[in-house]
Amino acid sequence: MQFKEFISLPTLDAVILASGDGTVELREGRNWISGRFDRNIGIDQPSHGVGQEHAHVYGRKGTEIVAVNLDGTASHGTKGRLHKDDADALQQRGFQVKPGQIIEWFVLEDQPQLLLG
Image (cartoon, rainbow, N blue to C red; front, side, top):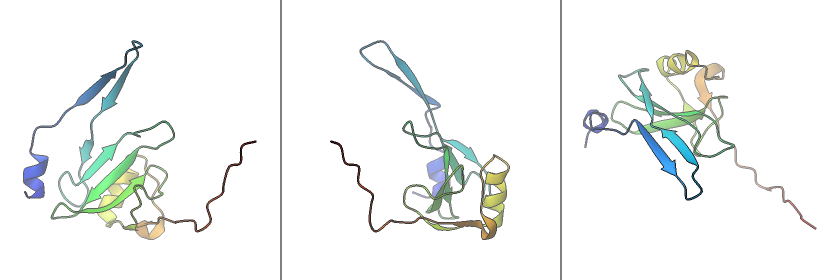
């Protein structure tokens, strides 16, 4: 399936989750914006409490180039360089993009440990 065919499929606008205790949570769907290509950037809300709004940036053939958080850090373990038009589109929506449009992901070799007594 080509990217243009994929993005033309019907999508959910919102998902409402209800639990047994009567609480309800609204999950909004991905918001598509245009950068270098028409509707090639999908902006998602955080999927958990400590996450950030983030964007998935796709190339011409629908392959994901990078995922970037609102603060300019990488998301989902991706890293790469944004095209200037994609970076501009994200900045217009409040995303912080570092000079050179570089999105970096760092893996710490020694993870800190929490000791509970």
